[in-house]
Image (tube, rainbow, N blue to C red):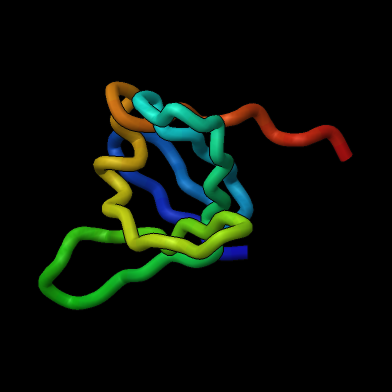
Length: 73
């Protein structure tokens, strides 16, 4: 499993996040971690309807995103 450690915490493939300002409570799942030379680390977030690329620093900013608790296994 890929993981990315940062000052603000840790992001793992499979983690779930929800936008703070969203009208709908869409859950975004971290599908992969993208690390390219010369740019900050990003993650690929997926929903049932598509996905997006987001910087890890923005994803870990609680003004924009909330980390959802892990689902019980």
